[in-house]
Amino acid sequence: MRRVLILGGTAQARTLAADLAADPALEVTSSLAGRTAAPRLPAGRTRTGGFGGAAGLAGWLREQRIDAVVDATHPFAADISRNAADAAASAGVPLLALRGPGWTAGPGDRWHWAATVAEAAELLPALGSRAFLTIGRQGLAAFAGLDLHLVARMVGPPAPPLPRDLELLLSRGPFTLAGERALLARHRVDVLVTKDSGSPATAAKLTAAREAALPVLIVRRPPPAAGTPAVTDPAEAAAWLRAHG
Ligand code: NAP
Image 1 (cartoon, protein in one colour):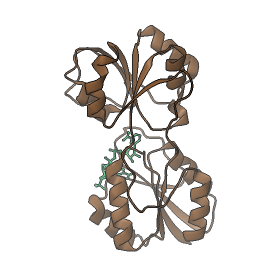
Image 2 (tube, helix red, strand yellow; image 1 turned 30 degrees about the horizontal axis):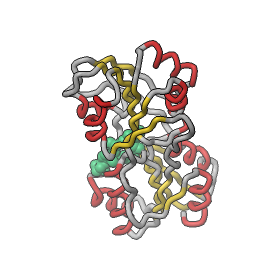
Image 3 (tube, rainbow, N blue to C red; image 1 turned 60 degrees about the vertical axis):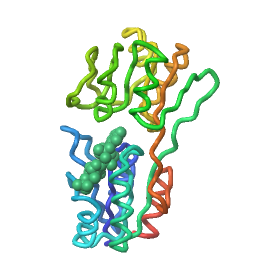
């Protein structure tokens, strides 16, 4: 029996865990950060909470005699990916990154790119005055000083500082195109702000924005950890694990 760690918190990580759950040759543990109060749990074993940096993760890999790691965390979760690369190298465990592709603009899209959430907040006032933010609760503080009407959708409640003119929508995807169209109209949104997660579960808002000819401000992904081999599909990660796990 080979022991595998999936660093998770994403739909792709859950797909991979479900795919591997019935494999008698693998013992799979999925790890969650523990940020969400009632997370969607993957199939199989789970553990929750930080490891204590790269050194803590390396110690955990050795202690648990892990044979292979898949970093299937969100493309914007850069710290854990860097830690995974350092820890896997120091514990001598093979590591694979599982990351779906980012979004690509099509005809009719009015996309503007920002390098960071903070840069998106700087660029936003020039693009609209009623913004729909889907950048997660950790990014909301960057918009706190803006004098705009902000509708922000996220899974759990954010911590202060909060923008003055804020409507919070607490909900979790997937979101339908009909629902996104209705939301943009109901809140009279004139600009969408998002991160390039590339997730199909949350892509309908981009179609709704295109249909309404709205500008979209997209935060670029941070660069992936250098030197980590990567695949885009859970099935490819499963094949890699069966070869390396
Ligand atoms: P981050 O900034 O890269 O990580 C911060 C710290 O959280 C890490 O150093 C680690 O603590 C702990 N951590 C993160 N992911 C972990 C995991 N899967 N298992 C155990 N510990 C983990 O990450 P983040 O942006 O806060 O995201 C946290 C989690 O939410 C990630 O697992 C990610 O997949 C998921 N998520 C993030 C986003 C997003 O937009 N950032 C969106 C959807 C889901 P230690 O140093 O103590 O080990």
